[in-house]
Image 1 (cartoon, rainbow, N blue to C red):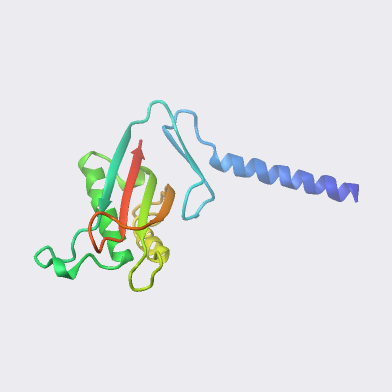
Image 2: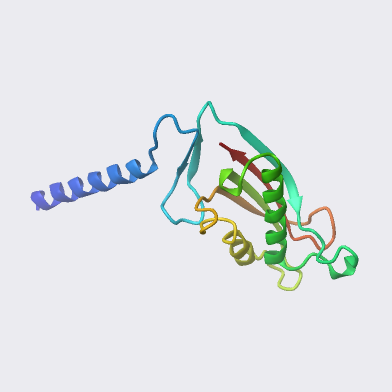
Length: 164
């Protein structure tokens, strides 16, 4: 029994060491992402002293049809896609990429059709920008359900931080 316990402890220590090694990076890297490989969100991000930051203010979706405001902004997934597209544009204009994002805060209003925040819609749109062929990275993220955003019909607002 003691041999089994000692062997179990050794296996656990090796697994922990391996997990730590996966998170560790060379000391000269500006941004180190910590989390399980393939996980939708990161556990944490370490940013070194040589990194540059870009703070992105809150953005919301564009109207589906700018010539007809009555068509609104779309559902939660559509609005998340639109909003992340705007954030991508801001990043590129400043010389950054979606892969440089390290933190997102997503504010979600309950969908009037269901009375619930559509986090599945948020995540479906999110996956089109993260953890894919175009961008293997993901971010630390907070998602909050709120009562309303500045314009009727808006269901999503996103702010972010990029570093490199």
